[in-house]
Amino acid sequence: MLTWDNITTVDGNAWRVYDGFFIHRGPSYPTNTDGGSIGCIEICGVGEWDQFNNLIVELSGAKNKREVSEKRLLTAEYQSASRPPLILVKK
Image (cartoon, rainbow, N blue to C red; front, side):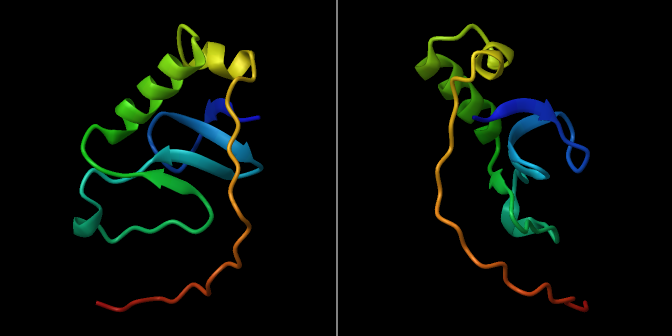
């Protein structure tokens, strides 16, 4: 079950999948950024994070994200993948 929790690597809260892995806000314009993600799921695009969370609340029948978390109404299932090596790209 996912929990609505604090995340230190981006502004605001995110859905904790387990340990330090989250579903969280990604960049508004992902093709214009130097960032990356290794293990988390990022919801990218202008306004997409809010739209994603609003849909979760709507489909769950809850009043807000905190209620979704407290009542354990959200699960995520995805296949395991091997982690690619981190490669420093010099500019």
